[in-house]
Length: 250
Length: 90
Image 1 (cartoon, each protein chain N blue to C red):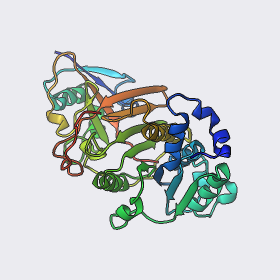
Image 2 (cartoon, helix red, strand yellow):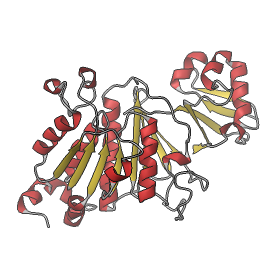
Image 3 (cartoon, rainbow over the protein chains, first blue to last red):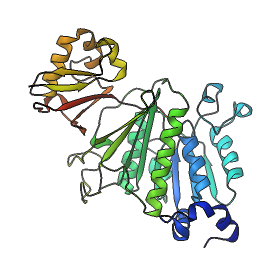
Image 4 (tube, rainbow over the protein chains, first blue to last red):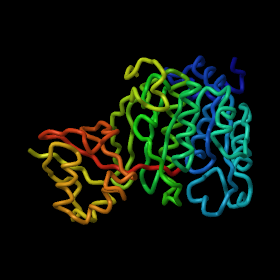
């Protein structure tokens, strides 16, 4: 049940027919795991916290560096040197004291990923490397938890939503990893991509609209162009191929 | 027989700024080979160390992922190939 303060706080989105009070209660009951408190993690966690997601676990192993401040808007000048999850969670708790936010300062590895995401209803990708994305993809598929992918570089970004066993996963469209890099990026790129990821999460929980499943959305900020490409489930996918499902049904 | 290849903006420096190049071929690999014939400087960006597709790239044919075996993917007159960059930053 939503209390009086929550009804006031979320009034404008409760007015949206696709959300309403029942949708808001679903958001309140949702548990979301966000992997990364950087460029993507900042807008994702800000908008999910503001929307009233009841429980957020935010995982990141880094400390705030001055070179993060062009895009990681949860971290400010005064936070340089602090753990990112502490800096982020402090602001998120100030933004919305009605939700539970749990900071975890840890490296996501093959050994701990399943334990980290255990009990969560959604896994959101805000990582800065492909290798960890594959770890998260596999863990989400194994636990059949929806996975919300996003990535950026320069003025560009990409987004895709994965419903394990029902729609194409990251691995259905790529198996080769890439070495981590110091990637170029302008803050507005992760701002836009992270906001789309957060939109997908909200849509998923309230059951509204059409999710970005079996299609990847590419954004080119320089041309201000969005392009959508279709992605099919690979029945031989080494991550999700073993799951029987409705295939291309989403 | 013409297949339009949409060039990613980072590669347009090698195509005199062209965003779309008309190529000939019955597979993605043949079309990319024809693309490099027209614009040889693209070779270093399109191919990896072992001669296959550069792992930094993704290929879509008629707005659909061509993965896996992108180079062997068949194409026909009027098809469109998009070359995009794999993104991994966050």
